Length: 595
Ligand SMILES: Cc1ncc(C[n+]2csc(CCOP(=O)(O)OP(=O)(O)O)c2C)c(N)n1
Ligand SMILES: [Mg+2]
Image 1 (tube, rainbow, N blue to C red):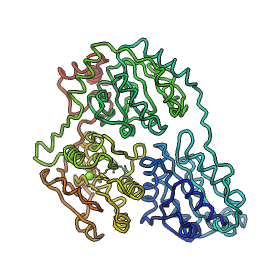
Image 2 (cartoon, protein in one colour; image 1 turned 90 degrees about the vertical axis):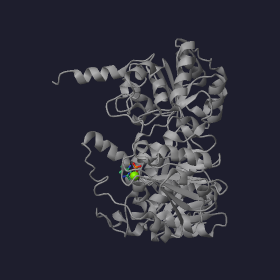
Image 3 (cartoon, rainbow, N blue to C red; image 1 turned 120 degrees about the vertical axis):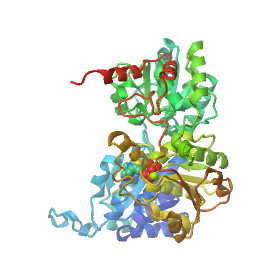
Image 4 (cartoon, helix red, strand yellow; image 1 turned 30 degrees about the horizontal axis):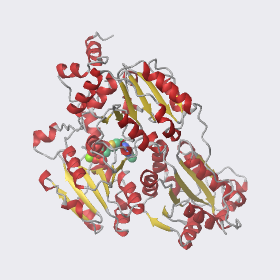
């Protein structure tokens, strides 16, 4: 078989049977081999960025490694934003780039020129910082080994994207019979043994009385989500989650108290700031969780972090309230959960976390829409949440619209996700295309903003041509809402490049041009179940007031319990019953004379 045929067959055997691609001269042999392989299909995207984001979706929805095939030069560089999404969120993806024939390439004649072959680009060096492995296969004898190796790396340990760059001559070369020598999951070597883990956790909780668990995406990526959820329910331990963790358990669970962070739930943030023992399972505690003022996070607690990546654990070395982190692979957690002693909880803590949940969980402040009588995006998301099946797939984008979805969506069995770490405008729609292609039996709902909608708008054609069952919902505030809110705070309300200078087309006419159904919703009563009941592609454009804000939201410098809109001192102080009261500190700072 040829190198190109080998790639097609290898991916078929891994279950990556629909390849997301845009063809070109340098990858045409691979595309042709995919087309000829009876077990394979392909989907033509309109932009490689969209193909990479769609591929990123597949592990999140199906635990399948999404694969792209693109051409050299611009095809390859267009993948970069999508690859970064997978890298930061530890999602395995497999990217194949065609490369120019080696007899035309850069160093062939020994000259250090910028480019020799047409569309020649050194994609491998470009993507090294955002892939787990990137390699160019220069010798066809190494092709099988490199494909197997790259794939193994993608799905092992802390997972992530890989890229294999394949010159046209290698694609055409005879590589012999099909074989998978070298394909095996690479054993992750983590330093903490299961018995030590149990002992450390037991010791950690033994001296506290206000325990809390943070459920991170790492639990789900390790496949430990079901047992962890059951363990938390059985042991009645209150828990909160990161945004990427939210898709892995049922939010009806009585001891789930909300998602945390800068745009997180107020009550969940209060729990973080009032607990005395915080166990962090598979979350890297980035700034959207801990805030820019990271040292104020969980200030009244000892914090114990478990992570598969020991580099992540080094981040906490200088925080005195953190225990030495545990370098452990959570895929080994299930059998040892039973050995962890149920942490003691004082009566006052149990009363506190139940009351805090009651007060703030699922409560949706939306002051601007109330003031103007316009649609509250939180209410719109809640309504849509109630219309759609429990096994739906829900993808959120970036900016304010992302915050609104994650603040108000109540997950039972749905898969809900976003590109949490990279958060590019325009992620949700192509990601939903990937999800819809691999899940014909599930309904797919993508939320986006008017600005983000314009970043991958070209792939309306992919949705239409493939007749995908996607409802693309625009939370349309006629501008870059999240940045406007930032400008209101820091630039005296000057809306440069967000309201001023920003423009949008008539989405109705545009969507119509693609032959796709379009609904405009200007009043919440017109947001009805029938808009979502019929299968097939549609765009639902929900008009919001341009000043609609993200609420609650943390302002810079504050710690996560003190979000805008600000609570009265009375409510705030009573919510900070056990914790260090940072608001008093901020006030003290402000009243201090300037130096
Ligand atoms: C590719 C990319 N460019 C720029 C940004 C910075 N950015 C974050 S949110 C945002 C505005 C998004 O506008 P819209 O989709 O309308 O979202 P809204 O905040 O209004 O809901 C911008 C420019 C980004 N995240 N990604
Ligand atoms: Mg907007």
